[in-house]
Image (cartoon, rainbow, N blue to C red; front, side, top):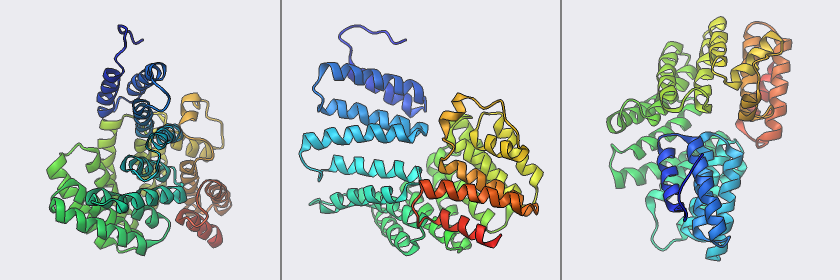
Length: 379
């Protein structure tokens, strides 16, 4: 219960919420942002910039928490208000909201929407009399990453190289933002199977982040995760496991047990053990994560043992819908396990479920759909 004297200082509530969000107390931050929004709605007109600010911070809090639909709804409220205030879509603040919406749609794997919003933001930034080169570099990385996911690797590489050149020239070669550019370049090399170049890029990123951010920063965890992924692709499974465990350790410490990124870390380790042929160890990782209430692993165990898991409850159900793309990822992992165990019929059922989820939620030309189609064709 929040108690405070009248008149209520909405600005102070917002500042407290921002401080809580900085230390990852999502629910408490949301509570304060919502309280501040209610106060402002009662005291101000509906198109006031302070109301837009409240919607924007609520969107950010839900985004950080992994509740992307709620984030989009609040960012769109902020966008509508800013458009009404400014009378034009060609404004830097609107470009920022376009970019933010692109980020959320990217996380939801709605790639066409992400590209649409990134291009809107980039068009506004490029049209400004004095270009903000660092902001444009960031947008090019975002746009390139989605092109990479969709199999448009030349466009991806083009955008990432332009970003890297701008950042290196302005910030120097040992800046965290340059580390991010190394990550993006590495991701293109990885998906085009130039694994050694990818590892080189990821190691450069990790070196910069360890130096500038410290060992327990989430971005350091992201670098370990990227290295784990490329070593998995290269079939150097022990190195993959080593790096994924480093990422899991950081994510657990910083995000807590129920965050989607922690779920992803457990699944990544399960995938590597599956690829290594240690199927029981793979299942053990999913089982371990079930103890922490992570829905992805619940789905896999439920399918593996063909039973009803009574632990399933409303809190888990809210994390991912049954047709969420990440649920499709779990079905695909299970299909891979069945296939390598010689159970082709069970694998086919899983891949068909994946295909159904992906085609209903993702772009038709998405790389994920192409890969599951290939798996079905090869059965």
